[in-house]
Amino acid sequence: MLHEDEEIEDGFIQHSNKKSIRVSWIGDDPESGIATYLVGIGTSEGDVSLTNGYIKMGTDITAEIEAQFLTFSESHNIYYVAVKAENAAGILSNPIFSTPIKVLNENIPGIIYDGREPYADERTTDDRFSIAMHFQGFQSEACNIVKYEWAIGSQPYFSDINDFTEYGLDHNETHGKAQIHVQMEENKTYHVTVRAKTGHNCHEEYIVSTSDGITSDFSPPEISSILPHLNEGQYFDSKAIYQSFIDSFEYKWNVSDQSPLKYVKFSVGSYPQANDIIPLSIPIDSQIPSGLFSPNPGIPYFVNVFAMDDVGFVSSQTSSPIVADISPPVIKNFECTKTISTKQSAITCSWRITETESKLAKLGIHVGSKELMDDIVHRTTLASYQSTWTTDVKKYQKLNSISNVYVTLIAANILDQFATTTFKIDIDATLPVIENITLVTWTNPGKERGKQLCQIPWTYVDLNVSVLKDEESGIER
Ligand SMILES: [Ca+2]
Ligand SMILES: [Ca+2]
Ligand SMILES: [Ca+2]
Image (cartoon, rainbow, N blue to C red; front, side, top):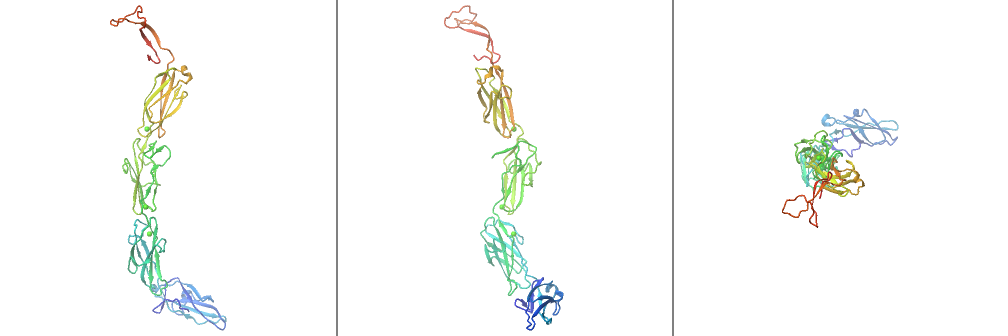
């Protein structure tokens, strides 16, 4: 039996593995040589009950022998290993016995809690300048613990950020805490490793345990713009969001953070940050659940999103005002030149347009020989701020063969809801009718004018034109 690696205390081998034991031996038979070694374990010299008798080992001189040991503290058992040798002639030697063996509990690595919270592990920290930790539960029945050291690394068990030190450490036999100044980098994970140094000649010099890491987080959650969930019937720019319906109100956003989020909530209010329309609620998939709310047209609503990350940083985001508009623009006072003729063929129109809920987008105007047709002047797009328009239709050949032209104005808002209105213009194709002309040249301005029987002045004629009409256009002069 070889005794090189044995830990012996008070005459016992101290063994701290309950499942197996490594045994080495040496034998010699100069005459016929060793055929096989036999090894057994029991609780007294000669007893091999733990291994159910001797196990044949062949000519190996070392073996890891599996057995179910009980610790001394739980059973008071003392174990013995017995080794016999059988030579080629089939003769068995007497057994040789090991030093008595006490099985002790294995060394137990403790638990490391990174973070400042006592005996509670933390995932994230917003501390830019230090790392703290607590630990407990290191045990060595076989060897005792003589000191503790700790280190900080970029990976489990690493000590690349802060080497093993006793500095900053405050502990008793099984537990302690530590803190040290470290210049922390953003979004980096730090692992704390504690090693307990065991007493002289222990089978393990250190009992080592590491933390699952703590990650630095110095930034609040980022909330993206709050935008329509659907892409139909909505319009938005940097100032406002418009929707063309009132049966739903669906908006979405995105929250991102390097750390897990403690919460994301949303509300809808009649002013930014308010929750008077929908109280603070938990969203589903970063959006307002459908069917939650039906907006009134023309009223601005604000969607607010609030988020907190694992460290406790909070952020919020408010949408642009959201307005529902279910009505087209309103065209008022659309008027054009009332009558035209082949000679006086200019048309001027004017109007007023109001769009109270959303915004006017564009106008279109055209002239046709029938209502809504544009065979005389094709559709012309106008800027939404225009309120007058002039054209001339003299190039239209058939002007004297029709009695009316029609000007149509179309106004569309940004949600593509449009209003149309038409103005009917008469075409004057007949001459004015004159029924009676009276000669009224008068040479005596002081007296009342009467019927003149003869013309006295040589140079001019006064005419009194009576009962004169033009049904289409009226008389201009
Ligand atoms: Ca942790
Ligand atoms: Ca964060
Ligand atoms: Ca409208």
